[in-house]
Length: 214
Image 1: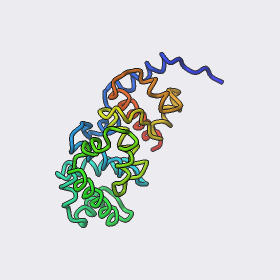
Image 2: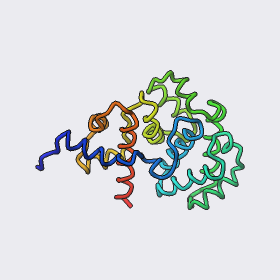
Image 3: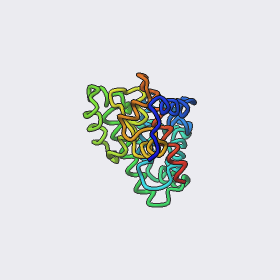
């Protein structure tokens, strides 16, 4: 059995992975900031990524919504379903785009109605308790446990109470690279009190796993 790298060596490898200061979403040109539009777009990305199919399609769809001025809950909720279905077809959602469009608009409307389009209000309603934050997220239409993990993977950069969040894709890459075997161990490898660093590392690993599975 090969000798496992020391913690110091694994930390050096982790620093190289996050040298560009970008995680998953930022690596694809999506802003990762703690403001209403960015948080909503990250939640949309998580919802699209959780659906079966090409992850690149989920990224393209989220970027296009932002470029078309539909990157807020209120604007997306007001879009006619047929228009969103046409946009999805243009992004190569070939399997039931009309149903996905309707579900996405219901999701956006719930975010707009319950939290005024601002996911920071959900955090406040949960009093920054991670379990309650997850529960409130799960109450939104189309949001399941995987969507929650994908969303919190990004937002742990500025919602430190939820950390460590390591989704299955990132953990698979961490294991293959010999960095860590669990979320807690990966947080130790990140080796910093800055929550951004762990978020960047997890996101970078998820991008690596995606690239290797194409």
